[in-house]
Length: 94
Ligand code: FES
Image (cartoon, rainbow, N blue to C red):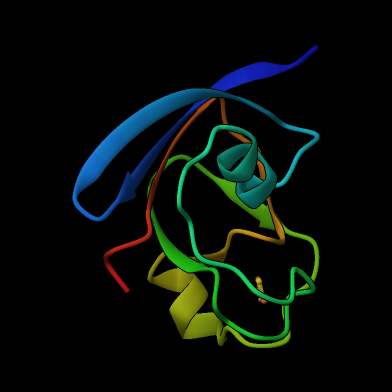
């Protein structure tokens, strides 16, 4: 068990939930009824782009984001696995 904390900002509302380093950020959002956008869940459509405001994430697949976007903190929630114990993911700031 590797329980961690993930704070989502969606439509200006902050919600903090328990996450898991073995689950994507998007799956954690869906399980907690957080209205994070997504479509393909395969790292190809960019619907799930969000900005990482705090913490660190590893992207399993990425067919869209450029290196400079990644440097700015952009992530794909459907491909992002938390690598820190606390994260803040802003879906609005894209
Ligand atoms: S849902 Fe399509 S890239 Fe994440």
